Length: 98
Image 1 (cartoon, one colour):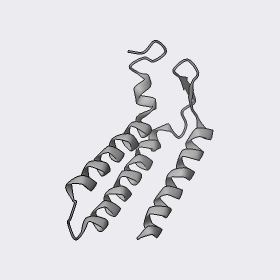
Image 2 (cartoon, one colour; image 1 turned 180 degrees about the horizontal axis):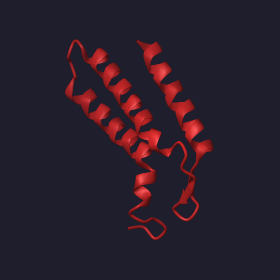
Image 3 (cartoon, helix red, strand yellow; image 1 turned 30 degrees about the vertical axis):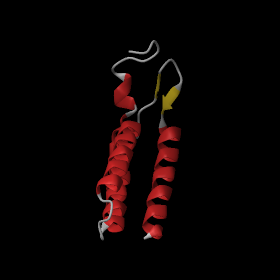
Image 4 (cartoon, helix red, strand yellow; image 1 turned 45 degrees about the vertical axis):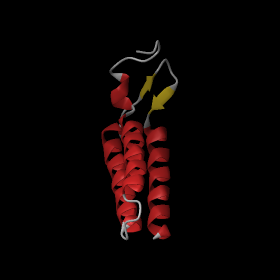
């Protein structure tokens, strides 16, 4: 375990972990669906699912106010607001690209 990080801190970075894992799944699916006629549609809906899953994983942190990793990361209402804004912007961008 890194020096400034405890095991309980991973709970507070759950949305980032969901987004990272989902992004890796999308990259693997892109390779596996190579040459498939429905590749674009499948990746579109997989990306939407990852972004919605990330938004849902943010819900427990609406009222949390904590600093983790020795103050490096703040999980509070300000961070929650901007995470929601950026995830909704990404979702809108993905849907418009269809």
